[in-house]
Image (tube, rainbow, N blue to C red; front, top):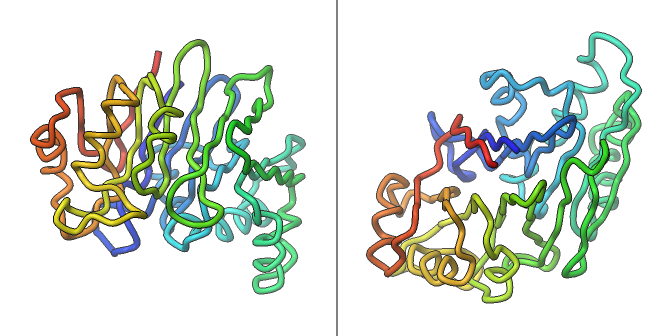
Length: 257
């Protein structure tokens, strides 16, 4: 699997960091984990063909995580050079189909009829999983997060390797156990420890989380202006975790396995 960070930022406009979006490629499967504002053009900047996306997986419905969902569907409707026979699958938590209907009412029929077959799959229960098409190139597992009523995290597995993506979440022992042994953990860190909250992670919370999850590498993302993203790895180490931690940046590519 190959992971590319397309958006390592937040809803706050930043010249160097887009809203949350991550591209995972394995075999013929190309999945977006969230698609915040700027994702569509970030794909072009990184040389990733949006036309070849096979799956979009949403963690929750906050605007900074789904901001380019409508533009992406609009691109499929009007931007393809030729006909496409393979479907586009949208995976998400409970309410994904309802969200699409509301977006269709606001923007037009292309949202549910984007010129390619659109398959919608809702995964909500702990332990839910999906074998992404193309000979099970990736298995996608989900787990609830401490953020919104519907929010979920993803674990992408292939050939004994795994990529974990927390989406937005507060600390949870159960979620940390779900991420046990992942090769790469893309983990949010929204606030400093002095401003710790139940629904977002801080450096100290990441240190506790990682003691259980035992990832080979943590890529810290979704850092709000109260913190300097470049300083977060050192703050995690100060909190007592000494494994590999890096600050995610837009364009960072990690080959897994």
